[in-house]
Length: 186
Figure 1 (cartoon, rainbow, N blue to C red):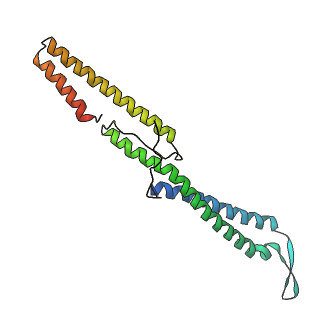
Figure 2 (figure 1 turned 45 degrees about the vertical axis):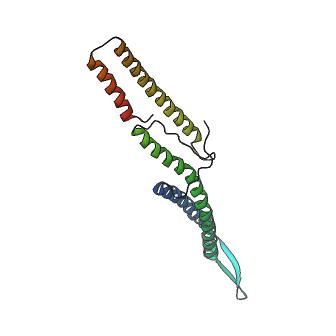
Figure 3 (figure 1 turned 90 degrees about the vertical axis):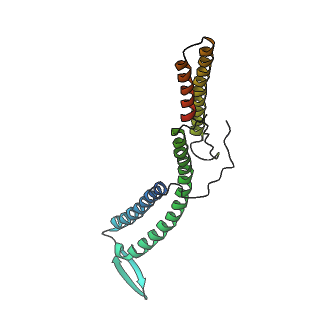
């Protein structure tokens, strides 16, 4: 069973709420990292003094007060850059997960309606390619079993004709075969 590699998704946001919360969680972790980094620098610098030159004068200041603006600015810039990179990376990764999930949901709905001809094709680099192969094997197996039941019904119909069984048996077999065709697309 080969996977269709030419399938292209047209939309980056496939499952918007899933992808949004996935990205949001990563952004919150990065922001938390920036806050923790700033807090650690402040905590480790407490009780120390720093000297600096301002307007040609030697100044002695509390280290926290001397470096706080620089630490906050540095962490803000770093967090902003990392957030942009993380959003793009997580969007790409979530796209590789959400796309196949969307396909599975859609195809499972069709199978629930009785369509046993469904085959899921995912791109080679998507997640869940092995799951789609197992899914396709399952639908093939189900289709084969329904066809086998239908074949048995046809044999019983022929046997009913040969043995001249009552008409209601033949009608029941025809109805049973009709129900299979009604409920399953095979």
